Length: 122
Image 1 (cartoon, one colour):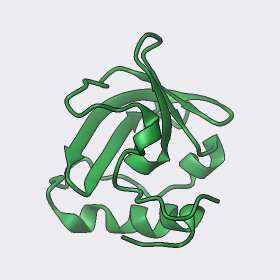
Image 2 (tube, one colour):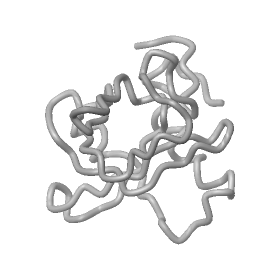
Image 3 (tube, one colour):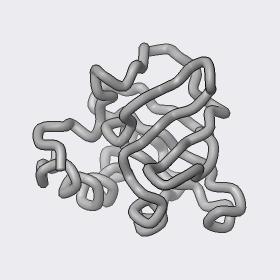
Image 4 (cartoon, helix red, strand yellow):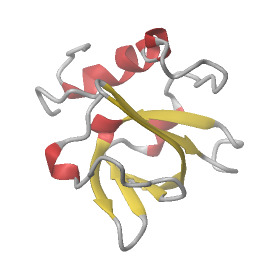
């Protein structure tokens, strides 16, 4: 896949500007709609989206590292990611009770998503 992507930062080409409110934006996987942005972290080296999947996978919240975002369409209120529904469905469970400042929160997601981007685990 794509070498050299830091999964914990938005890609320069994604069109994200710090401070842009993405809460409520629809999230599109490579093969269809997966839910809406519930939370957004813009911390340095810890940028990610938490997506509420609604009925798609029984209301589960999923964490998507910012590096999975390939495009943001502000007018459409959509975020496009480069992972499939199955890849997202098979991601580690997200515990909304863990404070986002705890680095260990990201560890299972780094282990899961990094191989898609050349195996680098930041």
